[in-house]
Length: 202
Image 1 (cartoon, helix red, strand yellow):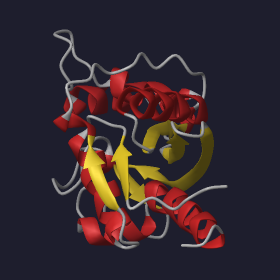
Image 2: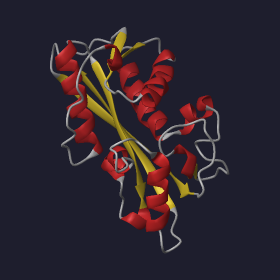
Image 3: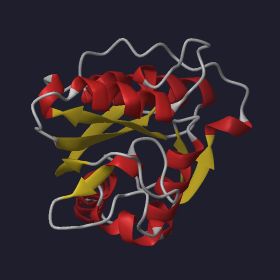
């Protein structure tokens, strides 16, 4: 038996992801609790898929805090790079000093695309874990589009400034966050989560 929570721990230290998920949860009156208010080391992401990594993080943060946790694992998959960076998207953006540098990542991707195939997609897997019952479930969303260089816009985060969704002419870095919340891979996964919650009694 699943009980709808009044609040969810958002199992990420990525503030961009947290604020997106917080905005989505606000729509269904569930409070988002940030993990960065706790002093918790991040787990090593050893999964081979987005689903494995999101469940790993949800279990880890949920078990550590005792709170029901919602984790996100997402990334950019580039056709010309055989789906990379994929689950390694965050690590791909680390520069030689170990710092997150997405301009560095953009340059690497641009250099790797040699066949003029700019097709790419974002994947987001959302996993829910209740440490009190060990209940877990996950939902995956996807959005397809093309890459553009140089990067455009500063409204998003991560790979948003080089990604244009099919049917659009602006990057995720150029459009307002409220618009992105309606059409992104995270929004797609979240809609599946909400539909499941509604069937559970939301």
